[in-house]
Length: 185
Image (cartoon, rainbow, N blue to C red; front, side, top):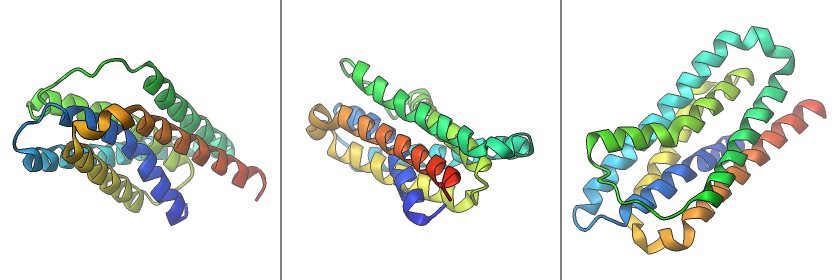
Protein backbone atom coordinates (compact mmCIF):
# COMPACT_ATOMS: atom_id res chain seq x y z
CA UNK A 1 0.00 0.00 0.00
CA UNK A 2 1.49 3.34 -0.99
CA UNK A 3 2.04 6.08 1.59
CA UNK A 4 -0.69 8.39 0.26
CA UNK A 5 -3.30 5.63 0.54
CA UNK A 6 -2.08 4.86 4.04
CA UNK A 7 -2.40 8.53 5.00
CA UNK A 8 -5.92 8.69 3.56
CA UNK A 9 -6.81 5.53 5.47
CA UNK A 10 -5.47 7.10 8.66
CA UNK A 11 -7.50 10.25 8.06
CA UNK A 12 -10.65 8.27 7.26
CA UNK A 13 -10.41 6.25 10.46
CA UNK A 14 -9.53 9.32 12.54
CA UNK A 15 -12.77 11.07 11.59
CA UNK A 16 -14.74 9.13 14.22
CA UNK A 17 -12.18 10.22 16.81
CA UNK A 18 -12.53 13.82 15.69
CA UNK A 19 -16.32 13.77 15.82
CA UNK A 20 -16.43 12.19 19.30
CA UNK A 21 -13.70 14.50 20.60
CA UNK A 22 -15.49 17.59 19.25
CA UNK A 23 -18.68 16.51 20.99
CA UNK A 24 -16.87 15.69 24.24
CA UNK A 25 -14.98 18.96 24.09
CA UNK A 26 -18.26 20.86 24.36
CA UNK A 27 -18.55 20.09 28.06
CA UNK A 28 -14.97 20.87 29.08
CA UNK A 29 -14.60 24.08 31.05
CA UNK A 30 -11.07 23.70 32.43
CA UNK A 31 -8.06 21.48 31.89
CA UNK A 32 -8.65 21.30 28.15
CA UNK A 33 -4.97 20.63 27.27
CA UNK A 34 -4.65 17.79 29.83
CA UNK A 35 -7.95 16.28 28.66
CA UNK A 36 -6.89 16.57 25.02
CA UNK A 37 -3.64 14.69 25.67
CA UNK A 38 -5.33 11.89 27.65
CA UNK A 39 -8.16 11.41 25.14
CA UNK A 40 -5.84 11.63 22.13
CA UNK A 41 -3.46 9.06 23.61
CA UNK A 42 -6.31 6.68 24.38
CA UNK A 43 -8.02 7.06 21.00
CA UNK A 44 -4.74 6.87 19.06
CA UNK A 45 -3.53 3.87 21.04
CA UNK A 46 -6.78 1.98 20.59
CA UNK A 47 -6.91 2.78 16.85
CA UNK A 48 -3.37 1.46 16.36
CA UNK A 49 -3.96 -1.55 18.60
CA UNK A 50 -7.26 -2.54 17.02
CA UNK A 51 -5.77 -2.20 13.54
CA UNK A 52 -3.00 -4.57 14.58
CA UNK A 53 -5.47 -6.97 16.23
CA UNK A 54 -7.60 -7.08 13.08
CA UNK A 55 -4.51 -7.72 10.98
CA UNK A 56 -3.38 -10.53 13.31
CA UNK A 57 -6.79 -12.18 13.04
CA UNK A 58 -6.92 -11.73 9.26
CA UNK A 59 -3.39 -13.04 8.84
CA UNK A 60 -4.57 -16.38 10.25
CA UNK A 61 -7.21 -16.68 7.51
CA UNK A 62 -5.27 -15.27 4.56
CA UNK A 63 -4.58 -18.65 2.95
CA UNK A 64 -8.30 -19.40 2.86
CA UNK A 65 -9.27 -16.28 0.94
CA UNK A 66 -6.15 -15.18 -0.93
CA UNK A 67 -7.95 -15.53 -4.27
CA UNK A 68 -10.67 -13.08 -3.31
CA UNK A 69 -8.75 -10.86 -0.88
CA UNK A 70 -9.36 -7.70 -2.91
CA UNK A 71 -13.12 -8.32 -2.88
CA UNK A 72 -13.09 -8.87 0.88
CA UNK A 73 -11.07 -5.69 1.46
CA UNK A 74 -13.37 -3.75 -0.86
CA UNK A 75 -16.53 -5.01 0.85
CA UNK A 76 -15.22 -4.37 4.37
CA UNK A 77 -14.08 -0.83 3.56
CA UNK A 78 -17.31 0.02 1.74
CA UNK A 79 -19.43 -1.39 4.57
CA UNK A 80 -17.47 0.56 7.18
CA UNK A 81 -17.63 3.75 5.09
CA UNK A 82 -21.37 3.44 4.46
CA UNK A 83 -21.92 2.69 8.17
CA UNK A 84 -20.09 5.89 9.10
CA UNK A 85 -22.18 7.92 6.64
CA UNK A 86 -25.47 6.40 7.86
CA UNK A 87 -24.55 6.94 11.52
CA UNK A 88 -23.72 10.57 10.80
CA UNK A 89 -27.13 11.03 9.16
CA UNK A 90 -28.92 9.44 12.14
CA UNK A 91 -26.99 11.35 14.81
CA UNK A 92 -29.27 13.33 17.06
CA UNK A 93 -28.46 15.53 20.03
CA UNK A 94 -25.08 15.31 21.70
CA UNK A 95 -25.12 13.78 25.16
CA UNK A 96 -22.57 15.25 27.56
CA UNK A 97 -20.25 12.61 29.02
CA UNK A 98 -17.37 12.91 31.48
CA UNK A 99 -14.82 11.71 28.94
CA UNK A 100 -12.05 11.33 31.54
CA UNK A 101 -14.05 8.88 33.63
CA UNK A 102 -12.16 5.59 33.09
CA UNK A 103 -15.24 3.66 31.94
CA UNK A 104 -16.34 6.45 29.56
CA UNK A 105 -12.85 6.78 28.11
CA UNK A 106 -12.53 3.01 27.61
CA UNK A 107 -15.96 2.66 25.99
CA UNK A 108 -15.40 5.63 23.67
CA UNK A 109 -11.89 4.43 22.77
CA UNK A 110 -13.26 1.01 21.83
CA UNK A 111 -16.28 2.45 20.02
CA UNK A 112 -14.17 4.75 17.86
CA UNK A 113 -11.73 1.94 17.00
CA UNK A 114 -14.08 -0.89 16.02
CA UNK A 115 -13.77 0.22 12.40
CA UNK A 116 -9.98 -0.01 12.74
CA UNK A 117 -10.35 -3.69 13.65
CA UNK A 118 -12.16 -4.37 10.38
CA UNK A 119 -9.65 -2.28 8.43
CA UNK A 120 -6.82 -4.27 10.02
CA UNK A 121 -8.53 -7.42 8.79
CA UNK A 122 -8.58 -5.95 5.27
CA UNK A 123 -4.91 -5.00 5.53
CA UNK A 124 -4.03 -8.60 6.39
CA UNK A 125 -5.82 -9.82 3.28
CA UNK A 126 -3.89 -7.28 1.22
CA UNK A 127 -0.63 -8.35 2.94
CA UNK A 128 0.18 -4.81 4.03
CA UNK A 129 3.10 -4.28 6.41
CA UNK A 130 1.09 -3.69 9.60
CA UNK A 131 3.59 -1.80 11.74
CA UNK A 132 3.76 1.37 9.62
CA UNK A 133 0.00 1.14 8.93
CA UNK A 134 -0.86 0.89 12.63
CA UNK A 135 1.50 3.72 13.52
CA UNK A 136 0.11 6.05 10.83
CA UNK A 137 -3.48 5.26 11.84
CA UNK A 138 -2.64 5.80 15.52
CA UNK A 139 -0.87 9.10 14.83
CA UNK A 140 -3.72 10.54 12.78
CA UNK A 141 -6.24 9.42 15.40
CA UNK A 142 -4.14 11.07 18.12
CA UNK A 143 -3.88 14.33 16.17
CA UNK A 144 -7.56 14.44 15.24
CA UNK A 145 -8.75 13.57 18.77
CA UNK A 146 -6.43 16.19 20.27
CA UNK A 147 -7.71 18.80 17.83
CA UNK A 148 -11.31 17.81 18.54
CA UNK A 149 -10.97 18.29 22.28
CA UNK A 150 -8.92 21.47 21.83
CA UNK A 151 -11.52 23.01 19.53
CA UNK A 152 -14.40 21.67 21.61
CA UNK A 153 -17.86 22.98 21.06
CA UNK A 154 -16.78 25.77 18.74
CA UNK A 155 -16.81 23.50 15.69
CA UNK A 156 -18.94 20.48 16.61
CA UNK A 157 -22.22 22.16 15.85
CA UNK A 158 -21.11 22.96 12.31
CA UNK A 159 -18.67 20.12 11.48
CA UNK A 160 -19.57 17.11 13.66
CA UNK A 161 -21.54 15.18 11.06
CA UNK A 162 -19.46 16.40 8.14
CA UNK A 163 -16.32 14.82 9.60
CA UNK A 164 -18.00 11.41 9.90
CA UNK A 165 -19.43 11.62 6.37
CA UNK A 166 -16.01 12.64 4.98
CA UNK A 167 -14.36 9.72 6.79
CA UNK A 168 -16.93 7.31 5.36
CA UNK A 169 -16.48 8.64 1.83
CA UNK A 170 -12.69 8.30 2.12
CA UNK A 171 -12.98 4.64 3.19
CA UNK A 172 -15.39 3.85 0.32
CA UNK A 173 -12.99 5.47 -2.16
CA UNK A 174 -10.03 3.50 -0.79
CA UNK A 175 -12.05 0.29 -1.09
CA UNK A 176 -12.94 1.14 -4.70
CA UNK A 177 -9.30 1.93 -5.46
CA UNK A 178 -8.15 -1.44 -4.07
CA UNK A 179 -10.71 -3.30 -6.16
CA UNK A 180 -9.89 -1.37 -9.33
CA UNK A 181 -6.13 -1.92 -8.86
CA UNK A 182 -6.64 -5.69 -8.52
CA UNK A 183 -9.12 -6.01 -11.38
CA UNK A 184 -7.18 -3.75 -13.77
CA UNK A 185 -3.48 -4.00 -12.83
